[in-house]
Length: 460
Image 1 (cartoon, one colour):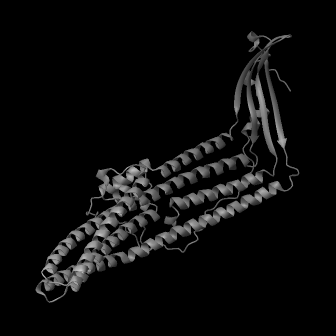
Image 2: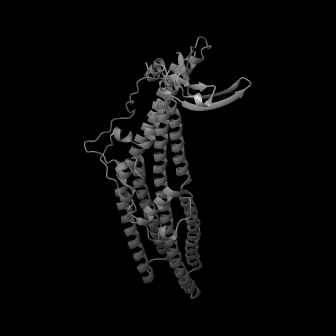
């Protein structure tokens, strides 16, 4: 069908085409989305919970070296870089799908010379634009949007894990450096005692058994020094793997000087509202994936209905180039097409059922994400509840061990106790010192765990 305009190419598109392009979708076959009720007990407390996501890293990490180490990891870590690139890719895919909701218009010009003469034409063409009467294209766009949002939530979840893992690796290094320093001091002390015992044994003041016991303790301390040297190197390698670069010397923990307050405790009430857990990035990621699966049901349902596409062109043609824009040279064409599924062997029905099952799987995954978040918070809070008492008890054990050693040394010098009691007091003190270092590391790790499981640490 060809139509010639008496005037300009701007009036070439027929009113029918303009009306068709303006038609909105007549139906949306996707189910209406409603956020599922959290599959966990309602643990709401009377006091408002602290939203860890509002506590910035600069406020949480009070040690400047630790804070700078975390920021270095956020710049260089490869896993986080991949997560950020995945977000950009999902955003580009959403842009591609969004473009499908708009008409694709192209312009062209051509000249030809044949044995019958010359011809020239200029056209503006609409290529196979689908009228989205049943929401197929719109739901494809919604699924792409939710995929983009899910990838962004995944990036934030990766960032939270990186912050916590980097801080924990730095604290592990600090603790092992402290243990190494303690082992070195213990080795120096025991070597001094061994030298004294060797002189006393030479004078016949102590037996060979006593000397052997003293030498055993000295060698045991030497073994610990070597073991902690290996652990320190392993800790450094683990930290640098997270950093994606070498650990600068100015950011390394000081040997024998652990951070007393490397992280600030986020105070929490006895219970945490389930609504707070639903704002965790990993839970949000699962919810966006659920919403994408709901939109996919609409796509599958729409495939069972007719699809109408429009192809149209408008322009001007002339046997002479100078006559392209003269009156009467305009032309247009309009070609709608209809695709109606009649028999597909049940493929469309199976596609709808598959989409429903994907939605049910995504729902189960969302419920599990909420339950996992609830359990992680409950576990971290249960550990926190006993840590203060454990620290106080361990500090009392250390004070008692120091007193025991002082008394054993005094009595040994006075000759009222034997070497065995002195050696036992030294072992007790060394074990109490190591236990306190380990418990302090546990307490710091619990702070990090709370910060992580409550969704902190993803701020830009």
